[in-house]
Amino acid sequence: MHPKRLNGLDTLRAMAILLVLMSHYSGFVSKHQTFGFVGDIGWAGVDLFFVLSGYLIGNQIMSGIANGEPLSLKNFFARRLLRTLPNYYVVLAAYFIFPAALSGRSTSSLWQFLTFTQNIGLEYGQTFTHSWSLCIEEQFYLILPLISLVLLRLKSPLWLAWGLLIAAIGGGMLFRGMAFLPAHPAGGTGFLHGHPAFDAQVYYSTFGRFDELLPGVAIAMLKNFHTGFYDRLMRHGQALLITGLLATCGVLYCINSDDTNKPLIVNALGFSLLAISFAILTLAALSPNSYLHRLRLPGAAQLALWSYAVYLVHKPVFMLIGAELTKQHIDANAPLTIMSVTAAGIFGGWLLYRLVETPFMQIRARWFPSKTRQTSNRAKKDEEDNRTYLNTSGL
Image (cartoon, rainbow, N blue to C red; front, side, top):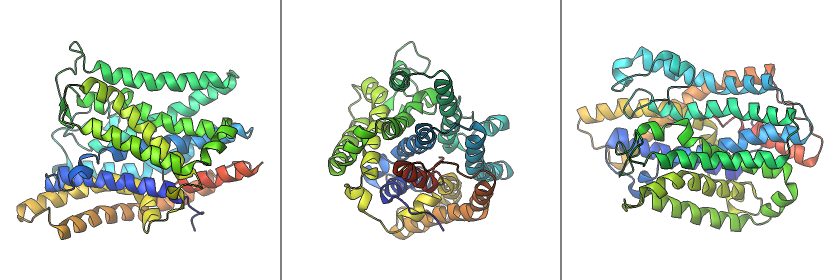
């Protein structure tokens, strides 16, 4: 039995995977703008996953620190690896066992896949490209606890942690902005949403996207180290929801705008601003006063729970079915076809969740149980949040 879930986070996570499904359906099945504007912004589902992971992992680490518990790297890494590796390696094996059916125009070295470094130098159209986001998350899982441990050992003031976080977000903006300079190797090559000069090596790069995890970390810092301010924010859930929706729509409109006169500003700042907008929505999802927190959408909890497995499986399923639809001259834009193919992608993820993920999560619970000490009402709340949602993070 799963612990009580938070409806708002379930809704956001379900929305994220649905956006990804629509984007990849248009790209690999219909090869057409099947879902209109919503399909155009489907890529943003990964950005939403980044923000949610930043909060969930950050909260797991910082709630323990705030409660005076030692940070156990062994326990943290073991729990993360048992969460992410089994599903990933099963899908990776399928790509290498059936290369003719699933591979792209080129494939990264196996050692890069095994070490989660294939996003370095990754190009559009290569094998298993959607693993790029998992690479960034795995690298984040490594770096955040190490930095946290160093700051703890040095007994650094809290303002230094905030300074590092803000500087890192600025660094991500700077990295993307430099891609538009004429002297940059990526200048004038590649496309992103119709804009030239955004190379795949920037889009997939850790340095170009890691900053999107940090607004989620900022929420965790507010929740655990600035409790008074965080509690005041939680009393304004509806305002957070409206602000987050307006900000998200505005940023997405600017990024997808046909105005190519400002690609430097839009793409250098856009991804960070989108992550901040999603972070505001995440705050709304955590606030008991928000409709996003109260609303329980049918199926959202299940889709959120399966989302990691669905993310890994759906693309190869889409590619195989899409090729067959083309051979049989079946209209991929027909409503029944859309529902059937999407259901097949979700069903494949559910199978992976049931057959691989669930057994390993049971092993994790036995070997490396969560050790959050419940010393206060807030600690109890953090423990519930962590047990519920760390099982669904890890894109």
